[in-house]
Amino acid sequence: MGDFLLYAVGVPVTFLLLVTGMALGARRLLGLRVGLLRTALACLLGLTSSEAVLSGVPGPDTAPALASVQFGIWVLTMVALLAAAEVVAPTGTVPPPTEWWRAVRRRVVRTRRYSRITAIAFRHGLGPYLRGRERTDTRLARSLRLALEEAGVTFVKLGQVLSTRPDLLPPEVVEELARLQDEVPAAPWPRVREVLVAELGRAPEEVFAEFDEEPIAAASVAQVHRARLRSGAEVVVKVQRPDVRRVAEGDLDIVARLAEALHVRTRWGRAIGVRDLAAGFAAALREELDFRVEARNLAAVRAASAGTDVVLPAAHEDLCTSRVLVMERLDGVPIRTAAPADREALARSLLDALLRQVLVDGVFHADPHPGNVLLLRDGRLGLLDFGSVGRIDAQLRAALGKLLLAVDRGDPAGMRDALLELVSRPDGIDEQRLERALGRFTARHLGAGARPGAEMFGDLFGLVHRYGLGIPPEIAAVFRALGTAEGTLAALSPGFDVVVESRAFAEKRFSDHLTPDSLRRAVTEELHAALPVLRRLPRRLERITGALEQGRLGVNLRLFADERDRLFVVSLLHQAMLTVLGATAGVMAVLLLGADGGPRVGADLPLFHVLGYNLLVISVLLGLRVVVAVFRPRG
Image (cartoon, rainbow, N blue to C red):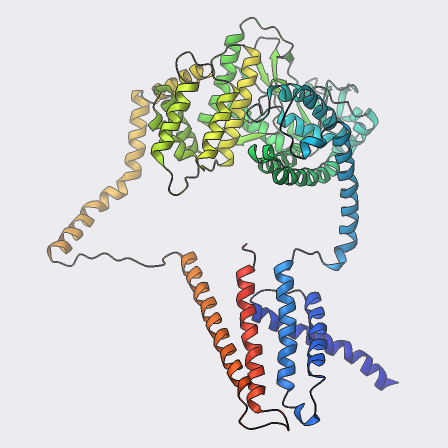
């Protein structure tokens, strides 16, 4: 009985050690990490294959001689299976068995939600558009809004984002989707109270002196309630909708899959860059779901807007959590329903504040649509909703300033140089053609009598895309914010000339930099930066002229100075050497297998054949190593 137990325990241990050793060997042979589960399966299949191949070999006297061949076939089969598995499904892309049940449950939930979203789309008549239909009309716009409303919170938010992109969507679609910003049903008070208690750790009655259970605004992610602190301060409390995070994470996966399908199946999806839109929307929504990020954004933009005529609320950070945001209450009405006396002055102050945020401080409100702008009772404007905030560094701000100055001068060459500083410049760009295209753009949208609108931003994005210029996310956020602000300014003051006012702002900023104090400060800063170089310059000039006079001047160039270049060349040489060695071993194997003479290790088995089989195994193994290196995903 004891011997049986030792045998029963020893067999799995031996097999486990064998699998571990073969996994380590496979990693060395293939040059990558291989999972133990797939290695174990490959070991079993390889062992079965090697026994099946050699089972028909006659004569027991040949078995010892063919042991190396059997082992080689075993290793070859195992490595071939692992290589095929790595090409089809690299290690790490398939979850471990412990995660399979959880993954199946997630897939079932996602499939149900995906089926429901698809059914909603077809019920509202959107099926033809999902299959590639190009025509848009009023019925499409209304059907799209109703489908997004029925699909739930994430898709309502998606519709709100799309309503700020008149550069991509037809006017009737934008107008219909804009209704989503104000027509979202509120969550019931008991569910909202649960969120408040969970986040604040106390009942609302213990934190606030008064709390209005009826929300003053309801959005797709949160709703806002009036309240008064025990100190007497009037505040608004932004409370995240219950379960919105769980629903949003599942829906974002569906949005990404729908975007991929639309990109593949429809021409309009590829034209508007639907995949990039989906990725940007997912990143923005995940950030918006954390109200602590919004509180930090509010503090940053509020500091950047100091000294302007636009008011921003202050956050009570001690009461702010990831799902609750308590802010100072601004007493006003949305500009859509307001009737201000001096619309043009208000539009000018709003544009001035936004341009100052972008060009001076580098922290700006990235979504200034009309629903986020209030007309206060004292006649000033107030900004709300800081879930989306952009940031740009000093270098990009300087390039944007140059672009504005070039626009002011009507200088296409200056616009080209400033634009190439803002974007990722591709190799081989035709700068002269880009300059001519910018000249046509300037004549069309910025010439005398021209009225820039949303079409201007659409043409600008089209021009950038046509010349393969990669816009950094920060600059894309600036362009989107300015495009959204253009619609807000038009709603506030119809006929407001954004270009003229932007030119006036740029001219004022430029003149501020030309004052004697500013020039003196700029020259002093540049001299401080250049002083170490100027001190070393005479000594270096003397050394260069001395070497030139004595004929010792030389130039030292280092090939492959970059580590990435060296690694690339080494990998090429490595693959080339493996290919040559594998081919050589294959040729030698064929020659040895074709030879009939030589010593024999059995009655019917020449030694040359045994050596040929082994060389053939080595040749195939080296070839597999090269194939895996070629098809391995680049991280």
